Length: 322
Image 1 (spheres, helix red, strand yellow):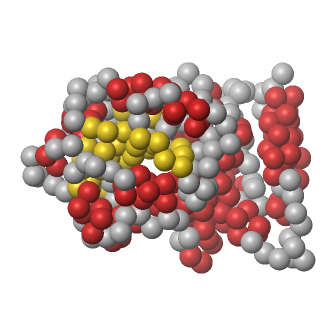
Image 2 (tube, rainbow, N blue to C red; image 1 turned 45 degrees about the vertical axis):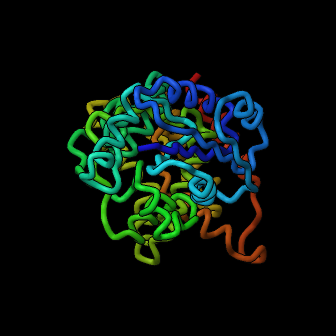
């Protein structure tokens, strides 16, 4: 069966080349690559144009809309959705689609996902924050079924109209429409890049926070309690001990607008008192509250330059650990 690999991109000049190179080395031969650029402003398009791929472009609408556009132009019977910051074992595609080709299931995912940039301190802290094992993203005991599809029959995808665009929750919308789970594909090994600096971490935190915001009032309340400074620091300390990393530095960033400056001062004091590893533990849930607050009228919420605030956090951190 022919496979169409769909890759949404948005300012991915640093990673898209490696992603495409690893796909070219796949054992499974019958496939096409469709790259959908989601309004990039960097050199992503220039890099793509030099590759043997089907290149599409749209205004910035998010990955869900980009994947839908790619699927619309796909010629394969099976759709595979990957990200630009992934690289793949040569048997990845063969093993991912094997259960579908054999007729055992209509859609698959892979729990054989590893971190590709593990030597970075920020990367390791991201795993601790997510409760993931070292070098892995999902743990070894991850269930054999889940809601996010990595591969699916195109006719099944088309039947429900594809993804419902909505930010970080795009991936889950297929399950909501189809009503059945993706099945694990043994041996479909791939590598995924974790955020590796404060700028990337804030960006990812904002993205994930959108999902938490959509959980409704209860989800909002739970995340608010979780993101409060005393609770988040306590949880950070517990995680440090449980993960056998007693020197792990808790650096919880509260992104609610009205709580931005107090945490900087408080964390500055903590960092001066605790001279330990140069690590970061960031709670992405707090971005949900920034998103919530940011949607209020200007009369109720001050406008902040979040790029400058992010830079200030990083400069503060660097100065304190010298």
